[in-house]
Image 1 (cartoon, rainbow, N blue to C red):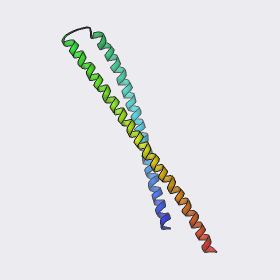
Image 2: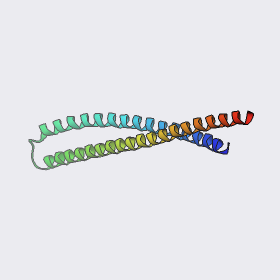
Image 3: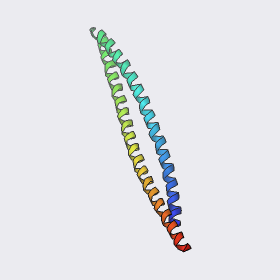
Image 4: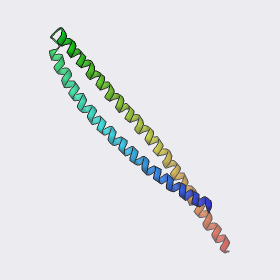
Length: 129
């Protein structure tokens, strides 16, 4: 009976952790979609700026240096956005693995509880006889 109580308590903890992980995974997916939208928007803006800069590149001297600096800055920003997306993607993968581990533990606990309930019922039947 103590084992059953402990298993039920463990099951409740696993269910709660599972729900929290599902919320975290959902938030991560939403955050990744948001970052992807920012990335797509920035990439579009970046491409427009690059096109404009390429048209202006025919000039020389300080203006060219300024434009070249802007291109480098845009490329740097693009790399940072790519890095953030990769980081979020890795985080989502890690959360998915944690979720699957907890789900497996939960399913194992459910089987254990089912087995314990069956043993308890058998034991009670034997006591009645």
